[in-house]
Image (cartoon, rainbow, N blue to C red; front, side, top):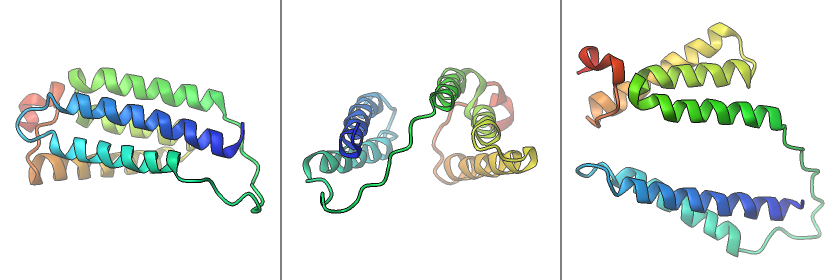
Length: 148
């Protein structure tokens, strides 16, 4: 597979996912759909540009593509599906740090303390921005009595 073909396949997939995200965001309450639709729309536009604009200059020497590590891809996919399934019942403030910790520890091979620190700080940032500043309702799951 050439680099151009791979880029176009990825761009096509991202366009389809963006359209799906826009469709899902249409059901959001109030004006909560604006940010997801804007991000998905921008992603679709950028990927569409990648599809229609000509590729790189053929005179430039191409670097060799790395083969896909299917075990890592499968593991990340399992983590992502679990994130999606567990986000509503457990709450995003439990699932986000668990997902990040698992990905950082098992896929990025970071130390336990480093992975935990990054996961906790990222989750705290998400909480501060979405719950406190923007007041966007997020699924809190089993933390319902504590957060709200």
